[in-house]
Each structure stands twice: as C-alpha cells, then as structure tokens.
Amino acid sequence: MPTLHLAELAFANRPSQLPLLSRLANVLAASPAVTHLMVRGSLAHGTADRLSDVDFVVGVRDGDLPAFVEALDDLMSVEAGALLPGWRDTIVADLGGVGMVFLIPDEGHLHQIDLYLVPASRVPRLRATVATAVLLDREPALAPAEGTAVAERFAADFLARPRTCAELLIEHLVLAVLLHKRVTRGQRFVAYSEWHRLHTATKDLIKTALAPTSRFWGWYQLREELALTPIGRACLADLEAAISGPAVPAASDVDAAVERTLALVERACPEALNGLEDAIAAYRTYLELM
Image (tube, rainbow, N blue to C red; front, side):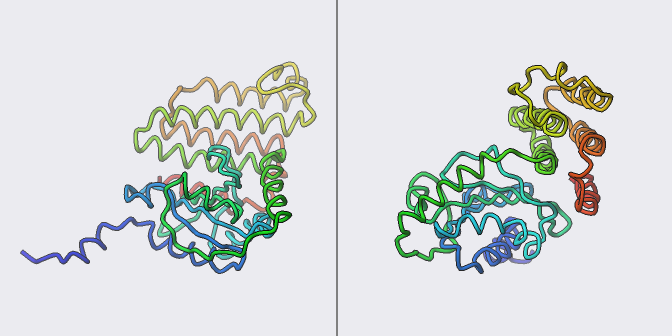
C-alpha cells in the first residue's frame, strides 16, 4: 500500500476555497489604501466545508475608506471577476465598518465572498473581539482625527442609504445562494430566518418600485397603498405567493422565489435589470449546480 506523506495529506484535505482566497488577498492587498487583511469565519478556524464562504476583514486607511468603498464594485468586477455588484450586508454584526457580499465564480462554483471594510484605526479593537487569521499587517501612521471622523460618518451614512430596486434585486440573488447552502447543510433555523429576510426584501422591492414616498412603515397598509393599479395588484399577488409557501424552504422553493422576483422586477422596475442581463443568465446556470 503506497505511503501518503503528511504534506500530500494536508494538500488533499485543504479547503477548496484556498486558491480563491489567495487570489482575492492579492487583489485587495495591491491597494495602498489597505492596511490590514484578515480572514475570519470557518476558513480561519479550520472548519470550512465545500460550501463555506470566504470571510475577509479589510482594514482601510481612515481617510481613504469612502473612496475605497465607492470603487469596490469596479475592483471586484474587473480584478476578481465578481458576477454582480456587491450587496450591502444587512446580516453581519456592526463592527464599525461596512459589510459587502460578492458572488464570484471559481472552478465551476459560485462562491460567496464577504468583505468587512473597517477604518484602520478600529482594527485593534476589532482584533480584540473577533477571531481572525492575519494575512497582511501594514501598520499605518496614526490616523488624524478628521480622517477617523470622516470614515465613521461615511460608514454610518452608507449603511443608512435607501436601497434602490437594483440593490434589492441583488439582495434577493445573494440570499438565494445563502439559502441553498442552508438547505444543503440542513440548517433549518438559519434557513427560516433568511427565508423571512428574502420575503421582506420582496416587500421592500415592491414598495421602492411602486410607493417610494410611502408614509407607512414595514408591512403596514400594503394593500391599501399598492392595490390601486393592475401592476400593484400583480405585485401583491407575487408577495402573497411568497409568504404562502413553507416556513422553511426546499431548494425548489428558493429557485421559484428567484424566478418570481425576476418576473416582478421586469413588471415593476425593469430599469433595475439594465446591464445585468448576462450576469443573471450566468447566475441561473450556477444556481442550477448548487
């Protein structure tokens, strides 16, 4: 029986995401604005499986944070091959920065890439509370007070921006990938939570498209406000179909939700699809493989 050397064994059992992680680390580290690069989550703890996402914490010089975040979609698209613009992560805990999620094809699979961008001045506090593996540590000079204030104000304002129909569409697409992972892993409680979050995104999409100046909060007065037009009634029927499904979805339920959302967008806010047609076609192909 042939002997398997330790190095070969380690290589055979390494997470399949490591080459992608290395490539993304090089892309991010190439920016002089990036001071720290850390990995967290299952890849940092050695518990990753084939479905695990790649979780980065990216320290950015305080004064450069606004420009870096605004340029991130282009960077991740051109240099990293992201399929869609990033989703402003509404699930991640608030660590004083901005969370973004990208979907990146690699080796025939669609990978979830979580980037948490934090002002460099906050990195020491973050390290004290979040377990990370450090890939890059360029200790910056002490950030001036005005740079820190600008970064913190930008992060708060960025997260508070009203979401567009295009952003809400991307939220649906990202959540569908997350839900497929939950279903495959049998994580029913988390699947329940993210399934409800997807329904809420559908409601927000309809309101953003058809009642952008609504005076009502959340789910209140939807029928009274939206059922005034044929398009509004059709969108409410889509929402009824969404919330009438199972509390915990199967993979087929998630796929049906994606198709229902795309039909809703074509009806209520077709401009949200501009420039995304090819990406969505590719996304559908990857979703079928999950």
